[in-house]
Image (cartoon, rainbow, N blue to C red; front, top):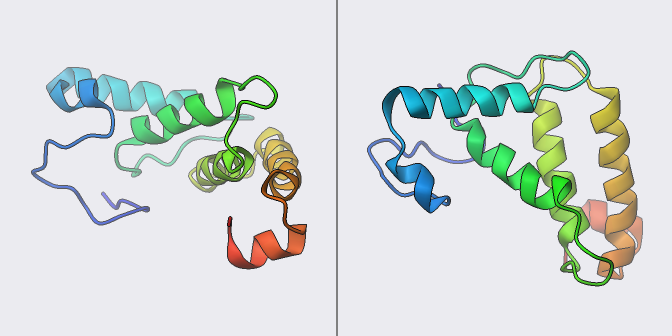
Amino acid sequence: ADNWTAPPMEGQKASPLPRHASIEGAASKALQEASRRAMEADSEIFYIGATLPAYLRAALTLLVDVVPRPGTAPRTHAWWAARAVGCQQRLLHGRSFSLHTLLFKLWDAAPAALGVPGSALVAQGPA
């Protein structure tokens, strides 16, 4: 299967989630399938060929599901959350209205948090 975000990590035990590296076999397959199902939105099915969707699910949990208290999030929080939601949207078979709405809410919040005009953020990424 193709990995859409980086070169394949075949044969490596490294993992950004330390406990995940030790999960193998049926348990790993079940974790990946549960992650796929958790990212389906508005009746849209998650792309089955995505490699290791648990990592995207973890990113969405940390960036979107766990809302930081006002004033405690890093300035780039909205930008990274939008990136994660955008990845989720692209990995669905069709467009999700709720993800589209969330994505644009995050994109609207990102420039103000970074202190740049909205058009500059789109053109160059975060500072």
